[in-house]
Length: 99
Length: 130
Length: 101
Image (cartoon, rainbow over all chains, first blue to last red; front, top):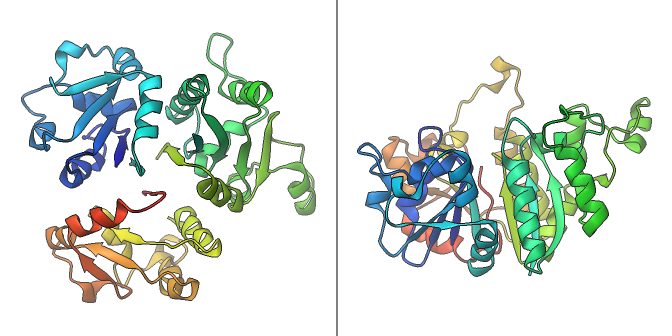
């Protein structure tokens, strides 16, 4: 399953719920304000509790638009552009947009 | 691959319309078929003919109209969402008392059945918005 | 909520097999004794009660979410199946399309 998350964890529990549910082979894509969750901070432990076998992607244009550099992000975050977003959608079934 | 989209949020307030539009550009470039974009909930505001953003801003409504003109993407506005929010297509409006056509070029108005048809027909359905 | 339920009913009208899952705060939508009329809102409980007429009987709540909110099935509007997060995940994995509210 591909989870698409578009909200910051401070706005919505979508990412938390998805971290709780995701299993090996799943992928999580952070877009829009959810890319803030990619930033490695002392307070944001959410992604640390996630299974290593779950891939986490962040949409590069949304990172860039918010001034977030990859060096600020968790090492496990894989940046993708829109073509990569399309690729993730085609490679996973089903796709679930969580709000 | 056949991909259908659903947009549930209004432009300018929410990034959904922008994300969807960029996604569609990339998908078309990769050779995929965007079989339908269904505008639901506040997403119907993407179709407002009279939207006039300042000249130095992106024109979301116009982008949709151009997408339809250039690639023939089917842009469907949900009739019940639109009626709830006062956005009426001429033929529906006539029955209810007469309004100017509210939809921009390239959009058509229809029922939820067309969303269901897209869901069944498409390999993937992606929702943007809330 | 109303517009989301419209999708559910329409899917059934198109002979699609519908699986409804309530998880997280979504469970609160099923609470009994909601008095929507005090806020001049439509009473969604009527639709929930009518789901079986539309052949939508596969309705589950997530056990972990129920426990976290101290809610038991007798507090809910309609009969539901209580399933673990793991079980629900496996079922969703089989779906052609997944909608979330």
